[in-house]
Length: 340
Image (cartoon, rainbow, N blue to C red; front, side):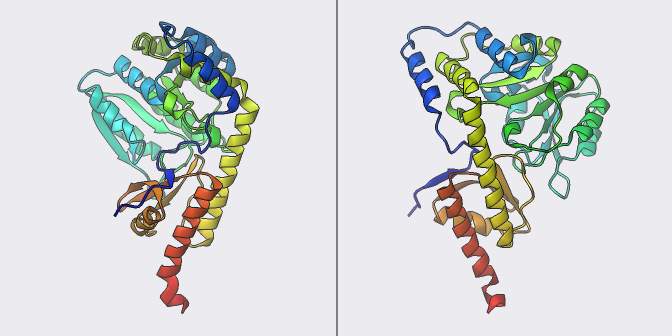
């Protein structure tokens, strides 16, 4: 008999629904659902650009950050080219490579679970057209400091486009992340990926964007699907940008819960590295397979990599308490013989 899912902590979704002002804007847009959206999302692009303090020609909007990533690959990759990325990482990377006929080149994480920038550089050759780095990293939550990223970018050959995935950047605080405007100004082969799915709680609406130099952005825009960004999503994003302070408080709450969850788990004997996304990462040699079973019994859905690790989205306080109870019991059962 299957256990009902009580807490969905597998996809790094926000535990909060859209804010009331955002829902109101969405309802207004729904009333006009018989009308097409803009042919291309020029108004939304200009709004995001102003918010990012960049000219509009530095911004491309797409169907989630993964949609923008696909547009980039379609723009720069030819069949038989190679695409390098750290692994483990976001599950979509090899799928996107396959969609455009690129040879995926997964590069193992370092023994401490970080992206190995030297190994990524060593994996680049004349066939490589794209290299992906993810900061904060999915699923471990690690970040690449600005100075290390700068060294890496200066060493990447100019024929290689760097896809810098910052889907979780809003959850990273005091980590020495790079200044985006300076970065794209200095490196015309870099496209920074962002999304409204995570911190802004609009995962179902599929809006992401990329930041880069005008020449690269123009190439990516050529792959944009006409009428591809719907009006409800556009209204939700615009309203969300106007509700910055309220959303910042929500992000602060998620960060506080992330730190509480990690602190409590470490106190229970789990080895949880510091993370800067809206999740925590449990990895071997801790008993992650037993943890996955215990959480399933408790009605908690997680992102589970058998024999490797377990990514837990930071949920509501109730959901996080359920996690702690399930994993505390597991550690007590493991240690019971020694304790007695």
